Image (tube, rainbow, N blue to C red; front, top):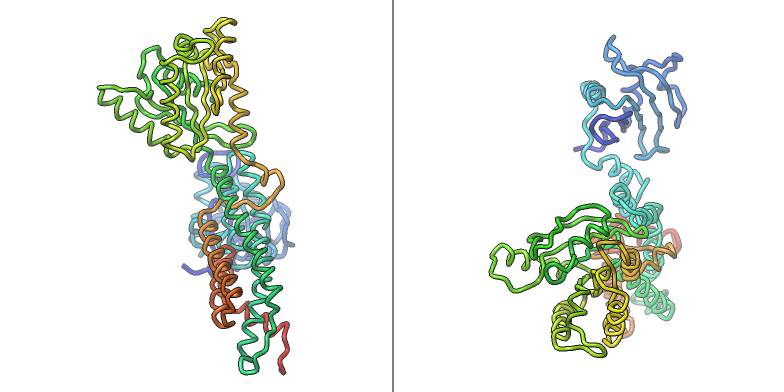
Length: 476
């Protein structure tokens, strides 16, 4: 594959639609399209200004393939930084393929996946993290994921990394300069200022690393497992949350034997709900497999909704206080909580619509007597309390950084590079405290810069050399 040839691809989804957009990029883009485009006003496409749109027909010899709008973008002021022509044709798959095949015969090459954005990166239109954000933006399916992708594509995250990197490069240049005068035992880099910078870099890196916990779940959806004994209304709750009949509901215990998953957006955040098989002792082989899957899904979930039956609780509960049967249920919940201490556990009491007012009052009084537990009463069947559950789920997501428009890490590759950069910066800080020689400090600094560069795509040593010669004249 070469990045010098002219590439072509359909830029809109394949299939029938109102319009389709075919993108051509490369130094020959305008020259190849121009003779095959007949403007209704007799314009020569090659003589038109950049960022203009023209109506006409695409011709294959004497045959008219379609009436189109052709947009002209001349490099470097285009998405890829090259000459770009975008052909907006009718959305017939036949027309789209005829136009693409025409220009393939004329010398274009079919673009590889992501190659337009790759060229934008290679031509300096985007850095690496911004280029990756393009894919995240396309894949965003809720407000929060869209906001993070837009913030990253505008350069919010990469700008923060670049600022840290530039300051570190400046000090690294001074350390490198000292090596040239090692025999004279001089220090160009103020060790006190350098220490302050390292502390600040560590604080920023730790904040970005911590943000991955939020960013990753926002990008991929927050997994929530709905668990509990058989026939407590788990499938009914899933249907109520999704507002559709997604899971089979039956009075027969053990109806759900496999996991059922679906996603919804609450408050701009994506949640992925997982309805699981009821937890109980059973001799049924198939149901046992489903229960095993339940525990696997609990391990994968970030939040666990433990569902209980209000009618069962009332029969087990002695007011005031708690009898043995109810204590046993609480022990089961505690076992789940102890097995997965990192999970947020929300205990939901379902079927309150089957209780009279006196029973509801007794239930609330009994639940208040239990310390260190949160119980949310609702009726999945009538929908009462479902909105309160959704609001409670939002509380589990720390969206403070998102609201404040701070940089949030969503990419695993970026997260890994930040961890490695932090480790190297901590080495430099330790070496500074221990009086390690400048040549050894320089090695760790270079490694930290390398990991910063992995995020933005600026992996080279020319930055150090350029900074030295641009800012420090040592004789010539």
